[in-house]
Length: 300
Image 1 (cartoon, rainbow, N blue to C red):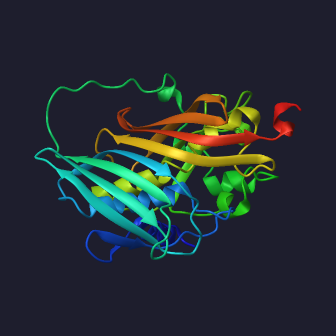
Image 2 (cartoon, rainbow, N blue to C red):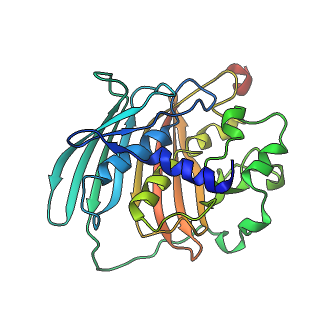
């Protein structure tokens, strides 16, 4: 698949079509190595459904979502949007996602939209090593990185896929060039669209929401040298929150800084920040995941 085709496929993945009053349908997921749906598929489509019910000038500034049941690959998703509130400055939408008529709810999302306003501004400090990060063009592509690994750290259906984003890994447990202690600070990478995207902030927001689930929860398993694809590991996303702080353009490079916050009682919390090349914070995300490790990872 060419990069242009991969980006077109990504756009189709996060897009939805109207199917009745505030009801939208999105295409089913493909099998990515497990018999369930990638959480970003839920996020991207639900964001698109919510955005379709607000005025174009209102931008998504936060979302809070729960992954309730694993979806079935290949079956379309039905997204029912509830217009919870429309105020002068803010609007709120609830999205309930299922498969099939009368199917059980698999995913729920609350989304808040706001009109752009002026006011005071306080800049966040970028990661301490931001100015010393290797440039994206000096790093292997995701495909090149994975092609050099044996065994693959994740199922091949996931690790070798091309889904329209150019990822350049700076640090991860599976990147040998990261050096000693690789991945201890988290999975960190540069990202941008693999081919030009339209200058449509609603579309790009849905794509960034989709990508935000790509490796965030992996950070809570990384300290044990495990991934969600490892044998003996039970690993399921539970919930997800995201905030959009500033406009962004995914045609440009952005740095994704991720790390585990805490792990305990069978759950792990990870956080991510997204920075543009100027060192401005454009988005933040937090996710909790169920994590159960076999004795081989715990020294038992």
